[in-house]
Image 1 (cartoon, one colour):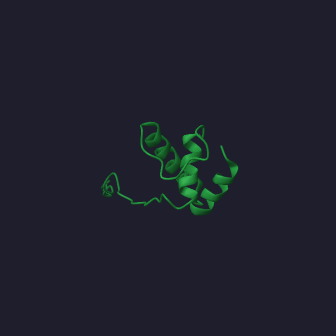
Image 2 (cartoon, rainbow, N blue to C red):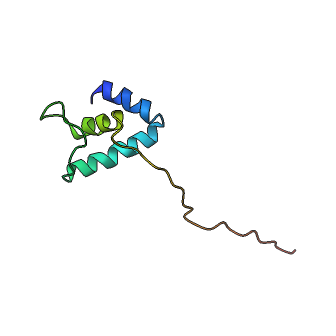
Image 3 (spheres, helix red, strand yellow):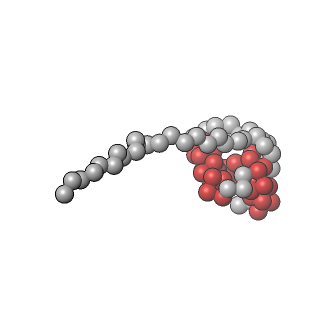
Length: 80
């Protein structure tokens, strides 16, 4: 892993768990044949470094959306 690209990517996405998720999803896409959004530094450049470079250069962004997976539970009163 290229530490320079990691630091630059952390500057764009300071939330580390979110950065990990973005990189992981992008690496999966690259492994499945997606084209890189940046020019690799070398033919041997790893997909993780390509992903970090894409984030560092602002070629990728993430959007968070929150969708509740279940409805709130109603409170029930029990009479004794």
